[in-house]
Image (cartoon, rainbow, N blue to C red; front, side):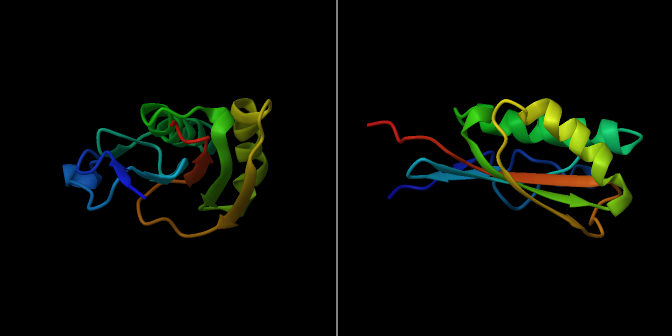
Length: 130
């Protein structure tokens, strides 16, 4: 089995420091995407839960696409919300991205390491190319 690591050294955290992990890893058709926050160019952006949710999900989906997968290949999404009261607002955004192919999902309340309202990760699968 070969493991492919996508985006090693490409991610930037707060203060533009390189992140010490891959954006995603892939093996035998499985793609594991690292947690994505509403960051652009190493800075948290977006004012509220709706905007931050869109940005975090779009960041995650961009990694999925860059690895050659699509939203329809996503099997599971993990969600961390800073405030549990944002659950229903997040669900509205989530549904707009996944209504045709809803994945399994877990959602928990958790303090964030960076100053944001949401983080998402995912696991995708597609039949390996021969």
